[in-house]
Amino acid sequence: MKKHSGRDRAISQNWKTATQLIRGGTRRSNQDETSEAMFLTSGFAYDAAEIAEARFKGEDDGFTYSRLSNPTVAMFEERMALIEGAEAARATASGMAAMTAALLCQLQAGDHVVAARAAFGSCRWLVETLLPRFGIETTLVDGRDVVAWAQARQPNTKLFFLETPANPTLDIVDLPKVADLAHDCGAKVVVDNVFATPILQKPLELGADIVAYSATKHIDGQGRVLGGVVLGEEQFVQDTLMPFLRNTGPTMSPFNAWVLLKGLETLELRVRAMAQNAQSVAEFLETQVSKLLYPGLDSFPQKDLAAQQMQSGGTIMSFFIEGGRDQAFKFMNALQLIDISNNIGDSRSLITHPASTTHQGLSEEARLELGITDSMLRLSVGLEDSEDIIADLKEALHHL
Image (tube, rainbow, N blue to C red):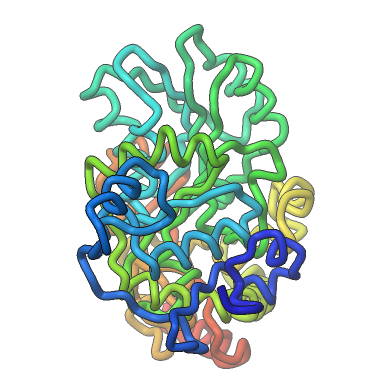
């Protein structure tokens, strides 16, 4: 192993986050490359049959098949575990593959899940539609209400599932209190941390057991590839998560892992700059629209809790345009700089209409219960100059 390659965990755990993001988990081949190598191979050869047997038994530290593990993917996993403060991580082909695996790998018929009702539309589908198909009971609660979490627990509750801040309402869940409630009844806590990123919030330090990401968002951050990752204790990852991934196959490709490794190198710089932009944009928009939700504003109902759990208000906000869908669409169509897109966490500023896109699959009743009206827009602030972003928003507002 090359000196300072980054794979020596004892050394890399003592590095600061900025160093881990660049060097953590690096495996150098005998070519001594500085950038991570891309191992575009489905399988691996063995010098002897005995070595193949030892690897399949887990007695030899090597690779067998890229559906199970791959050197490039392993570098991404090790780096993510370092910056998250987790013992281990496993990568998946997409964010929803990560969420699905994090739930299904530890649930069976007869179990019960308590989930926050404010969540990404596909995550709500997992809880409301997929899990019940397998005989798993589910209860949705207002994630902001600690009492609701407590009252929803049952003798067969095995899992709490939540996103904080939530998509697109920015609801904040009190992680330490909710985690205590889960652990008191023997349940695990799974947190979708995609809005906050590992830079602004560390759910494991706040009591969560498992953290999952869509790496497609801030981790790539440039709209190039799909990816996901699940992180937690070594025993959970190896004994519970890995068998599920091995046998169902939601595998991250080596190419995507390499792109995500490049994204990690600038993750902290991008997230902090985007959050600074978002703060400026939110302060402007608050004076122009009927309602704005952003955790960094004094007007945000849960600002104190957000400040306790997050290092800043983040990169995403939601606001409301009077006049319903017609005016919301008119506003979006008038934008010249900001793109209409359902993605988030990109270097480019992106805006979407949740009721007709990311949460279109929910019933109207469910959307209204969450506050997702036809007037709501979600804005993911990018790396452009904040003055240009504000100017674009101001011009679009003039069209209403």
